[in-house]
Image (cartoon, rainbow, N blue to C red; front, side, top):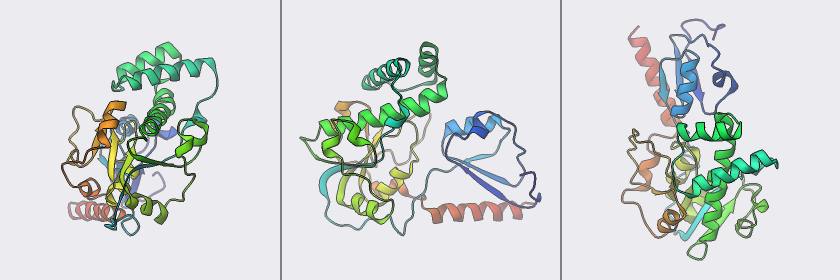
Length: 282
């Protein structure tokens, strides 16, 4: 930012907790910086650097690849994502914490800052490590494991990496698949797609699956203050019994409402519109 002319527009789109913003180091934000953030947690990090004008922008999808082919779908649920097993090292301290997090997840109770504080004090790990490493692992790993345990009721296919390390998931693991047309073809073949994200309701998986017409079964990490226009276009779970119920239901609203305005073209148009507005108001 310090090297750019003041009349130049700079667009930054924050999707991960980068060290620059986690540490709260002041950033020289300019009048013509357009700052987009994936979620409210990243907002807080950005505010600590001095950012004041932050706009929400979730992940986008490529509408040229991910679209509904309106082909017949099998009564199956798929998940295209890798296991986070690599972030779980075999130490007594980590194993104890992960076991406690699994118990918390299986109880169906939401994860809050207060609960993170409690886990941080008892384990010695900071809240960011617990949330972004261990809680992410637990939500995805146990969700996929639950799904495979329910395979008597529906066909299950798991794609990605490292699932062969989970003995429950291994029989349903189909290996890696390159992102792009082959993923879109899978979404078009499945009635349901599992979306087990611990906090992000603007994930790329959610946008791509819904754009292909596959019904997302979404981990319920909704916050009380959130307004989600498409919340009746998917199915929500927080417990294994919730998940069991989802695979025999349909949402009450069209699934395509989820991906409205989330294409890359829509985001590009939004950026240009904001630049035009800024220039007009100068």
